[in-house]
Image (cartoon, rainbow, N blue to C red; front, side, top):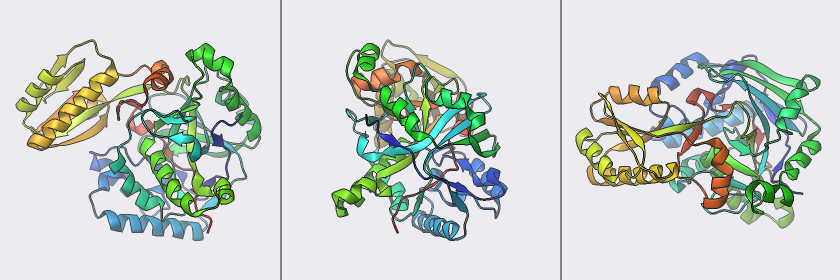
Length: 409
């Protein structure tokens, strides 16, 4: 049975300093330039994924030139032998962070023909949150001219019996270790093991889609295999790129073209290293009193508002997704009427520190979503509001390490 994912030929950096090469996802620390400045200083002139990706903090800073430089760097790294190719398979990855002792994942390929990001999708692979179309073009400009991809995408699957990645982990000493090093900037440690017997793994994923299991677990035959947890817009960009590429291909060419697939990490939602954290709203360039007064009047649910001096709490009985949706509507209305800017921040302390820096800022803080409810909720109601949850803190996000060729030339 087809499950929507595949094994692939994965590229790994062939460099002495993997700690300098690997760096955190581009959509992290978007209001903290100090983080990226410190990372740049740490990397120096060493080969690094930092030179191959576009941190979103720079989206409004000489964008066109940055994209040209990224694509030039990718070509130079490829020609310079910076990468080595593994044979077809998966990589079992084991991540330790400052917050969790172990998170187990599996690096493989998403079949973009089996993925949709529409809110009410019935595809095998679905978004968990709303997709903002305007966030795709800058990423697409990089991807459409790049020969390689480097993912920070994490895709969740629902394996309550823990028979896939956990079973591989129990046998990791029999697998070839392909990396083992400390991550920079407080990201923890990561190990990787090559899985060459990939068909057994794919068969286990297919078993999750048996009709008997689906009816017993969800009460319906909904062929919902994977939910995109992190990197939703990166996967949506890969989908948009593939839709453009395939227009000029024959049916046979479409079956194997590398742009049809995207590299991602697959993680069991029941893994102890997966925990959901809320994504708060950091609003700057506003009149605090006016903003808070309006939000209190508009609020339809439980949240906390921080103004730099104290917290204000509001309460109601709406589900968390509806609370977030209503808050985002108010923030948009306020900014359209009076100006300002919104950013999305992980961690209560991070948002407090940002608000404390300036008197024209406000923080809006939400409760966390119960991860056990995710698949059932998305199956029943479709995608959640954008930026509803984050899987852990910023430093726990996927670091760029594995790569893959996405062009045939």
